Length: 265
Image 1 (tube, rainbow, N blue to C red):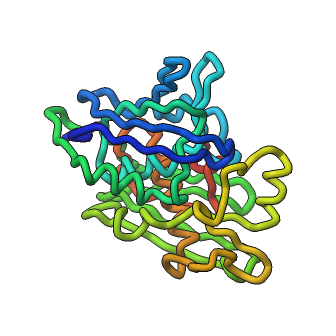
Image 2 (tube, rainbow, N blue to C red; image 1 turned 30 degrees about the horizontal axis):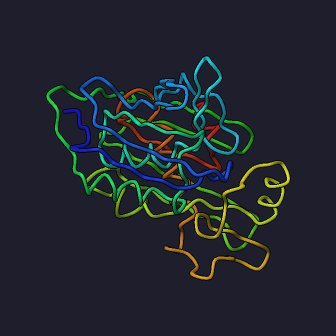
């Protein structure tokens, strides 16, 4: 059955790339509504659907025909999927979802505090019936049949603090909250410098991202788990694949994949 929130959730924080303060309100919605963003300054409604994706270079961005865009939606979308939310209206007064601590955990916590409501209509699902692979160079995303949603992947970085990591999770029994939700976004220090020189990552800090340099992890508190990097990549994949238009029942396997590969797959 479909699910929505029992009550309204309100969150505020800075945008990762804009550095501007953003206010976000998640409201319950009727069956069949889906996840829809409302940009309150313009009153534009943008469904969280792959057909509205306009950019995937550094995050997932959805847009309206008028030119209004909302970026960095993947951590919130992953939290909604992990909590089983099918219907919600998300009101936002900025161009980015707030980054908060760089993970999905604050969104999950806020959703759990108000609770989840079971609705009267069956949930729409998309079942993978045969294996499909999309590849660009050494980047690969493969979708396979599976009786339950499975997300697996592998990353391979030259930086020894990250290195090669693999992980797989069945998206059942609250596993998202326990195994992925608190895993933070990450970047290399030289990439931060390049992004800021181009007017991006203005809101990035050690409070909302893991930063890695040639000597290792810059954050004083270190990692939340040994393989936090690949776990966050799978968190992103869950958020990105939730834009497919229904509950994805199948196995996702990503190798060196990111937002662009997830969208194209």
